Image (cartoon, rainbow, N blue to C red; front, side, top):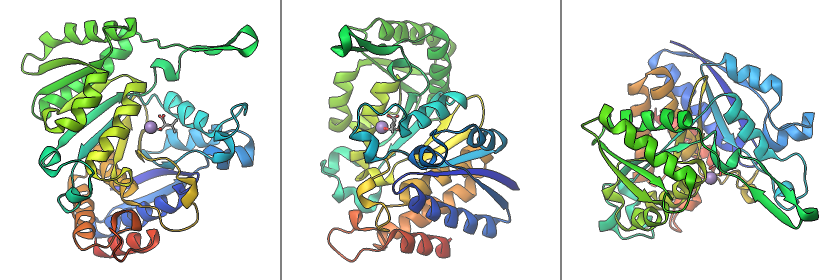
Length: 352
Ligand code: IPM
Ligand code: MN
């Protein structure tokens, strides 16, 4: 098969972890007889430096033409510490999500048998966790009207949702639930927020189309607690943009590290695959970042964008082997011998 993949390394550790995912993907292509053409493009702070804009039109064109986008990370401390900066790397990510119509961010949470002891949570609580968040990605407070009043002394951000936006993500949730244990949780704050009441009303109105799916409605604050108390009680969760952002970081603790969690963003155009972690600027250039989340995102890409299940399984298998044999970066080594980002990438590629 011919695979045309746009590759957006971005900022911080982005380029380092992307390099490893490219190595592993190329090894997969070789083993399974595929031809990958990579189309690199700039984004984030790196793009601001070059062309003054974090998601340039040329980058968008490259993404549109590709069959899938593999994405590293975005963000730079220079902008974090300057609240008055007019152009910010994160705007590039939001613009990209919007322009590619990536309304559903799929964030699975699962445990790795070899890392279960690493989680700060008790083994008996988290063992067997296998849940998926579907985070709405192109609406809500991230994209609502915002501004300042009173000479800057008052600030506001607004959360707006259309019924149609809720419906399309909810449909993905119902469909995903049908392929799994037929349990769907709608996470909202319907006891306070009008937008949440519309979420609840919309999801309720769709229940009759999926009579086999058992839907629960839970408030986000309660989910934040139950998620780490009884993660096994969840399967598919759908939620709005900001709640999903927060809960998926929390959920990564169940797996043992943010450096492990992949994601897929799907929508109306090219799908995008990226680790859920950020650009980790403190580690930039040190060759120490954990590349597994990006490599597992590449696995999701093979499976979801190209229907190549065996290829995806092969990547997951070799990742599990690196964990059980301790061929890992320092964040996972428990004070034992650890390996560089690039060494882990080489090891995985050669073991494919
Ligand atoms: C994520 C990130 C982004 C978000 C940031 C970098 C804008 O935290 O993908 O979860 O908030 O969506
Ligand atoms: Mn986040």
